[in-house]
Image (cartoon, rainbow, N blue to C red; front, side):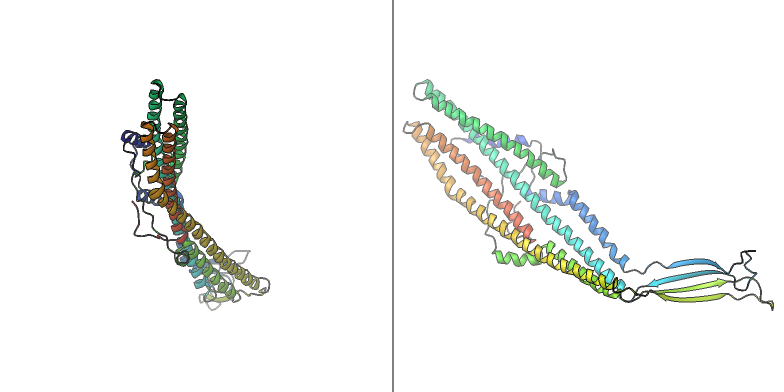
Length: 432
């Protein structure tokens, strides 16, 4: 955490107290806890998992034979008497038939369905990546607002002290009325900023709760301490290579390409006929002229469809499936380009924010604190105007707020970068 000036311990405590009151009675929500909650309770992720489970049930169906057909018929039944024993040809026929697709069709259908089901599994992984990214982004935005509120609250107490000092000096004739007015004006500006930050915090809490599957008004109190070290990101080319292997979006499209290729083969199989095999038993009643019982009849059948209109049907189906395969291949290349663009943008944001955060933390803020201390000493001995320590303090709290903004922006960029690559980038640097 940022260190306060040694003469303001009470203001620092009051500043952090205002943040705690904004989320009273809420348990501290660490980043890891938020991610676990989102994966467990996010309804959109649960819905796509259910879709994946549904698609897993399709391949066995596609690989199964069509249901056999059972038939019953009355053949050569005389309509004058409806007597089944009157005529020699009259029979009650019971039969069963089974359709057999041309060899290879069922296995191709099952393989295509398996690829689509596996692609749905990649959809689950892709949504999980994006959900974790969104949760991290919202969490870090909320963390920044908490830190900004704490800094503003601390500086409100500081300026109240400045107001009292200015009033006292003005009363004894050692100060100017404009000093009092200036301090009151800056205090009012801080109060306005505090209200804006509180409003933004409420919005971020509602958005984060939506991702976590919680009621929008659920309080969210974040930890006061986080890991502030920002490691160097890997080279861009290395991230491109890792993304091609790890990003579920690309894996999903690759499986869809394979499914499309299988469907081209299946379309070519449609040039070959399917077969229908049947067996029918005809029951006859009555007797033959020599007094014997009429024998039953057994009928066997084999039929097939004839692809007579292949030029306008099967051939066009092959063309269609080839075009769908080509579309999937172009979709993969387009997705790869978009993934690389996401990586480049997130990497650029991360590097910029990281460098700024280091600059603020190690250079600008320590110098600004020294300036505040120097101005206060000068003002107390009457060597500088009242405006100088006020402006120095305002400059300091602006730099402190900007530091936390750039630090959390770096964390957000890192979350986006990991989602773009498809895997964690800094395994050894896992906060919370």
